[in-house]
Length: 61
Image (tube, rainbow, N blue to C red):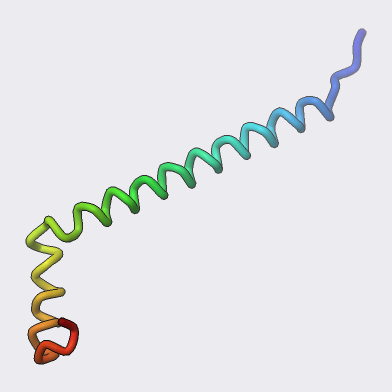
């Protein structure tokens, strides 16, 4: 009976982990870019920024 190649199996698990991690980071980066582009368009996001800027007497503008 042939012996299992544990090194090969371990390498496959490492590659799967690496791929999953890269996909997760890519999705996270795309999500941030998506949030950044939507932030100025959303009235709820602008309201706190506008209030903070208005209290600063135009220092931020």
